[in-house]
Image (cartoon, rainbow, N blue to C red):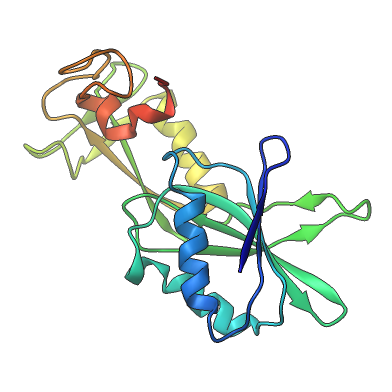
Length: 207
């Protein structure tokens, strides 16, 4: 059984059941958490029964075999002895890897988050912007670019190092920023292309 509470902008999902039905119910909850938008929403999943940590992590990593992963970032808590164990879960749309990090707490019980993305592949798509983001040596599809220079790629390379993800720089092959819809209204109902369409225009627009 699943219970859902939404205080302010945080969704809390409470999973009641047993370890035998856990994988099925975890899949159902994940679909609920990621159904409304590609924009990650703050969520907490509380498992209200005992589950071993190793099988739990295996079940999380198996998610991509049962559903196309969406953008998500949520905390997961499950009983461990007399206390709860807390994990940070991150998934990205179009990827198969599920990032699982242990959460730590300060003396004041505040969450200490460490964003270790465990070499997760992150794609950056843009257009070459001289002096700021000078991209060159790409193939006809805009992929496999050999060089990316300027302050923007320097900052992104630094973020990739400290957050431990693998950055891939692409350009839109049609040279289109995608700031106007290809068809339809300037809203989620329109058809978008270019950089905006690739990044996910629903992150920025509302009907």
